[in-house]
Image (cartoon, rainbow, N blue to C red):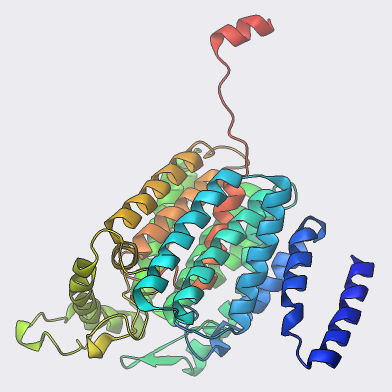
Length: 442
């Protein structure tokens, strides 16, 4: 790799001197990344790349899902895809599932390009979602190096600085002003994206405390990430965290005391949220939502009212192409619909987004894949210190969050969930030995 890197530098220098451009070297660099993917130390690679992605998320001029330009987030996404391609080609772990996921993404990216023309924003949406799959592929193909303990450790590493910054923003009232509420966002580009990231980090830290070793550091991080979730004042993420805690307690095999402890943490978080002035104000504000048909074309003054209005306007969009949709990125494209007040705004409902973008056919395929995923994780619930239980809780939390938020339009949340779910899938499922086999063994 060292000799190859040296030769590559010479070639790039010569190319720049002759052509006055470095873009010609792009295909060479991509090919080398794919070829040498198995030689890359995956733990430091993922830690560095994802940490850079998380720490720079708020510096992007536009949310990562809605930008049509190639920036740092796009470069990281392409790098992850290239590394994942190299690993799955050479190691062939999860090749079938990776091929199906890639075919699904390519198909509806092509639909978007055909429907809206050759738009860089549409192509970027496909690359962004492919990058989330790439993180899962990298973890799955690095099962000997990245197990659930390492994956959750990476999640903690990625979340510490943003969580501390979120609490600082809460204390100094320097967060984002959304609907009259100052909400912390850490290093992320929106409080909702930050909240879901912190929520998943909370349940991951709780798993490490309960099942890996009752270390004070992990318990402290549970408190830190839960507090950061509250600091964002995201009702959807808070509900998702509560669901994850309840699911983790209900699905985890063990004593009733541990289950009750998980429920107690959920109750404590609710109590703390309601005890804060901002939390109580958000609840009061959302509960004051009024549904007035006369104001149908005016943006509502509450988040709930805005969401309902956005969902209502997206139904005609789906009816235009009910079976195969309008392609990935259609709901966040500035040209995606004719409703001026919500043009280019994310739908805050992942099910409705995929319904409009991929149609009924794409959504059914996607939901079928989710069912298969849950079944596979359920087979691993009690293996490797209940790692499958943690992954199941994360999946359930994401499914709940997707009802009223842009769960996977926030790319960093997708990366985080992919780390945990893929680490659980990499655990070999233990199949019970039949009675006949036992007799033969005797």
